[in-house]
Length: 265
Ligand code: KIV
Ligand code: NA
Image (cartoon, rainbow, N blue to C red; front, side, top):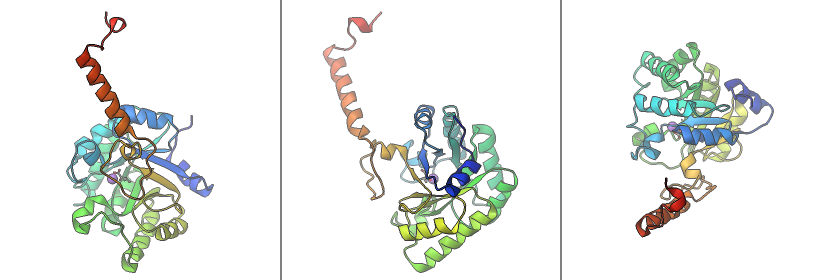
């Protein structure tokens, strides 16, 4: 195997090869994702929802992100690992942002960080990049700002917000980010952004005109049933197969069928 690097992702875009990215929050899942040949693992702050059951991504802490990320790093051989800076760990000032990014790099062994926003966090991005830490941007529907948006519907449908998004994307590239995520924006806008940049644009709910795709692994595996956005393609129905497995196990325990003679010492 050959390790995926921030540079190889930029090369993939230049060669017209699409980039596959999935989330993972633990060792076992990361090992499976890595072994399947996915290019990038995102230790997303969606762990706040998926792992901890919070309604938003806001409550997850830097310590918790480091725990998830260090577990993921122990499971991978090939993937590039990107770790989200959680809400509150970078917004107040650039020094704190750099401190948070350094903690992630030192304590988890992740390869890069991702943070949400454009020109508002320009100084923080500069500082982190100056320390040699690769940065992935994230624009469009940025879930850490959900209380500002008030809704999880598609962003940048109006010209003003679309113009700002393109400007922010150009800024992120100019600052030196190696890639950026575009979440839930019109496909035409996402394609325009991807064509305007030489760094890869990874979409989620951003159509097929971008350079790669990311999904939350638990969603694409069909482990969740309540979350049904249009962009989500389910590649399995683990909710049903896991439920059946648990029901069968319970029935076998209660009937005395499990364990049998071969399953004991
Ligand atoms: O936290 C996350 O899972 C994300 C992706 C949806 C891009 O940021
Ligand atoms: Na995230």
